[in-house]
Image 1: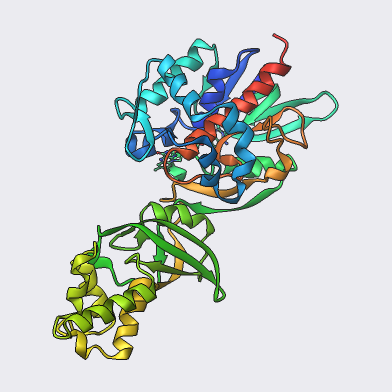
Image 2 (image 1 turned 90 degrees about the vertical axis):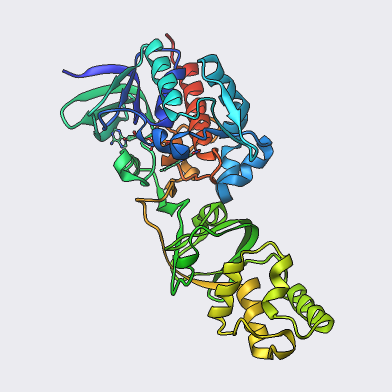
Length: 410
Ligand SMILES: Cc1cc2nc3c(=O)[nH]c(=O)nc-3n(C[C@H](O)[C@H](O)[C@H](O)COP(=O)(O)OP(=O)(O)OC[C@H]3O[C@@H](n4cnc5c(N)ncnc54)[C@H](O)[C@@H]3O)c2cc1C
């Protein structure tokens, strides 16, 4: 038997459930491959669900890299304040952290998920679990879709493809949406893991795991050319470079690139002048004592001396030109050769996805097939850490739903 629906939503994640909550007309079905909804949503924000950011909406656009402007209509149609208001109406208050990140008041992602599920139920949305969609075909003449799971078939006038990306595949996002989009003649921009730590060659900071640096300059080099720069927080882990500054920058980084980090927030000239001044004032003081007034870990400075093979007992007047240059370079422009991005198993998002060229940014409808909509991470959009990805999932879902609500008659 084939059951007909007005709208079929593929995936019960942030985008799919949010769409289900807001469809006002017709019969809606959500097909989810897992045995439960929102597995990634539950993990988000370390289980606390940082579902949006309280910052100025104009600043949001820059948080999605080069593709941010595509999201403008979606974000302005359903803003961060709308997301906060939406959950408030469902009985879930919010807290805004000092850094602007917004969480449910209870700091429990399950509150966000339960609110979405209950709202879908109130909306009479039929959610079916253990239902992996294996194919979607479109009947051009009669303008309807046939959706096949491993053992059922459904038809529908509208599809919202909200299958997520490829990161954290154990949550169900295994990239199925990309092959489904390709089968429906959509282009898919090459995907790669993002919001991920970076493995670098000859990493020497393993024993400094946990040391972090605030608001420091990171530059990205490819074929000896500087291609991007950013400022952010960097965390040294026992294996690799992490922290928001690295995670957010990872969408641009490729194997064999070079990352240069200014750990000390002084330019080479400024540090050079500081060394000159201190040497002049007291040539007998230890070189390492120059850094005691700078907000930088003592253990880190010791490590830099070790890497540069400069004895910690060196006094200013004895610092030779080569050692001085090495220290300055190591602190102000520390160079790391990228070995790899940490893979999808730890990446918080996927860059690449269904090409923006073929999606109407005002409706999220396909420019190729009428009635096909995209929402969430399956689209070639990825945001910084801070609540930007879940907000994008909600906002894109809301635009799709708005168009579907407009076009459905009952
Ligand atoms: C550890 C972690 C922490 C994060 N923390 C945050 C955070 O605090 N704030 C933030 O903004 N973002 C965060 N993110 C990113 C954010 O969770 C995602 O961007 C967001 O969940 C994407 O929503 P989505 O609905 O597009 O995809 P998903 O949430 O991945 O949902 C997709 C759903 O589709 C289902 N599906 C896939 N293929 C099929 C198929 N063939 N048939 C049926 N169902 C299918 C999947 O099982 C899944 O349930 C985090 C990500 C991770 C991994």
